[in-house]
Image 1 (cartoon, helix red, strand yellow):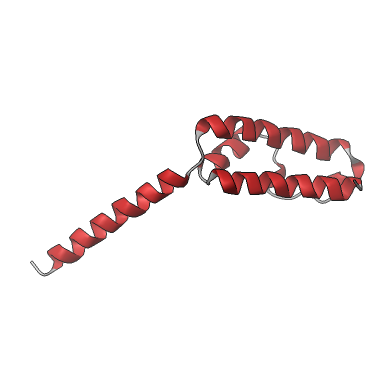
Image 2 (cartoon, rainbow, N blue to C red):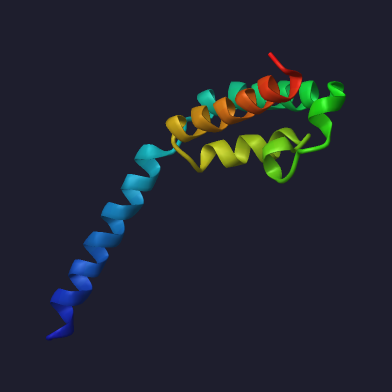
Length: 96
């Protein structure tokens, strides 16, 4: 019986934390255009020789699904920040 309150608290806490994650995840309707924009940025990096040498990781993936699935797991704000990071990099390597 002593474990019952602790397990009830753990259950309530896990439900609460899982709803926070779902509540903050980006919407599929947001993520589809996000992933398309990410691919456009990746193509821009591939076209510009000055940009092509410093890409690493999934940020510069040429796979739509990589960007889309990542977006679904983060907040819209985090996705916007990632898009802004790619934009800043592209502007810096192109020299604009």
